Length: 428
Ligand code: SDX
Image (cartoon, rainbow, N blue to C red; front, top):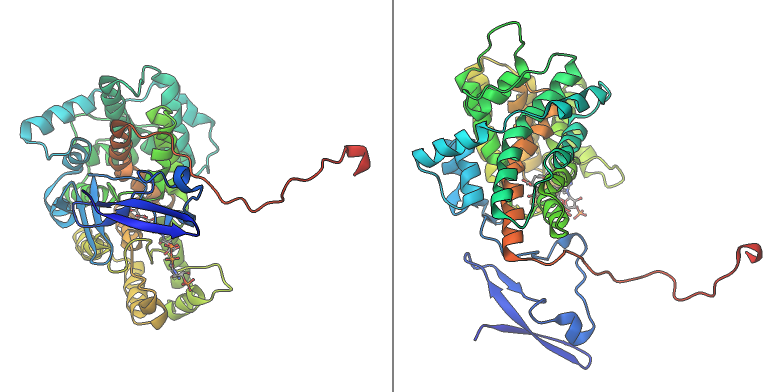
């Protein structure tokens, strides 16, 4: 028999089964204990700081020791030795592909890289200065109107939707950028690898030959891998919640993009660059930014620092810090923002405020600097995060649907007025 914890309150007592994960995490299964049915009580955990929303076999994260693994594989190995497409396959299918499987996967994706010409016309209607995350979220939701065959109960239809999403999101992302520049859209070239194809759609013109540099493609592959999944974060939870109501997968992904957009989540990569640029313009005084971040009367927080789960180095930030030097050197780019970021990190990590709260750089701290060296404009950086996170969102959505999870619907503790006598309008 499995272990139980006992909860006692006044004359209520309930046995709560204990669930133990494969890496030893322990959870109290309030659902299996039928806590509310048995006692009339619910658990209260604002912002889910102490709540596991599911059991999942996709990604393992140990925040105390700075460990991250996709399907059991260390992020360091995947980032160093895989392509993004291999990682997509791994997250979505549970195993790394062999060469034949990978080739077949690439061929399937290549059948879906184009956007419907009518959807392409949507891009013309957005304002020139529209944020590309808004455009991307709208474009993914709009896919559901073009592909109404997306039956989320049918594994074959789901597989087709997944191919379409993985193949079309980069095209939509590049179109969003081209729109902002007033430049002609560039159609995908299926002879190219995933990152090379995306970069060509971003930066080439119909008037001339253009091929992305191999170093740049490899750096982009690594960044996308580092973004590919992070268990039950805000945007993945949004995808799952929307998906639990059985909305089309395209609409779930659109919700994930919206959730990722904010500066507390994926939007922090854009906010980091804005912050570093401000520090540079103000003469490079990092101490001033740190004092501002510590001031509780000021809403400013050190962007790219802190994490809900990591109380240690985010392993992705470590990889990115070492990559940043390498990529910038290879590309011959000197970016003063990299020096400012390193100094900011050093000063923060020696400051008791950050030490006591165990606040370390997260994935967003160095990623923007690398994207900038690759030529990605600041307001496209969160779009890059979304492109990387897409397989993770879908893997969790798929797992949830395969587990047959009921609709997600939290309870609340009501704190408003008790019943009041109604007063007609003419008597108020
Ligand atoms: C991502 O969840 C994921 O997995 C997300 C992600 C993924 O891959 O999906 O890893 C991607 O979203 C990374 C995070 C990007 N956001 C930022 O870089 C924005 C800056 N960071 C913070 O806003 C904050 O650290 C969060 C939002 C990331 C985490 O918020 P928590 O978990 O609610 O933070 P906390 O309450 O545990 O903070 C503890 C203390 C508080 O101070 P006290 O009230 O105890 O005095 O630390 C302070 C916070 O005010 N604090 C900061 C700070 N982050 C936390 N103080 C200054 N600067 C900061 N950045």
